[in-house]
Amino acid sequence: MEMIFLLLGQNPSNQKPIIVMQLPGIYPGARTPRTLEDIEPEYGYFSMDLPNLIERFRCLHTPHVEVLWEGTECRRELEDQQAVMESFGWNVTVLPAEEDELHPNPEYHGCHDATDEWKIAKYSLKRERLTEPLFAQDPCPYNYIAPKFVQEYN
Image 1 (cartoon, one colour):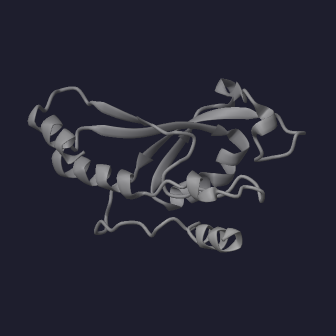
Image 2 (cartoon, helix red, strand yellow):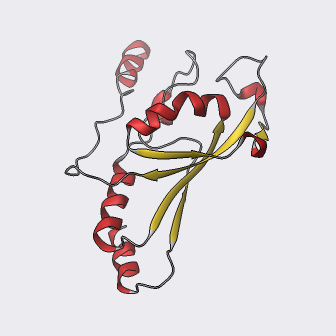
């Protein structure tokens, strides 16, 4: 990853390049289970390690490059999670509700009850500038689940 930023830094241009990282339905830094029945929340966890490294490489080699992380999420859940996202050092931009799309499979989406509309919002994250030394984030907070699961079924 650092090599990409080194190469971009060797050819500065008058344009401000933007790198867009597409998120796979989860955001870096934190993720809580959608429901109490979610038995594998560790699969919905994405640490801040990659965004932190990318931000460090960007600052060192290509401060003229902008890196955005884009994704989609249920509007209601996104609103619930926005303060958490910001606490991890993200600047969060959510597109207006007029641009929301209907959830394609609302019966499988368990973040809220069926009386609400299942609207999917688009959002963009931009990592705040790192001001502290770079350390790896703590391991997945849901790691306690696997040993318990193994004990129960062995």
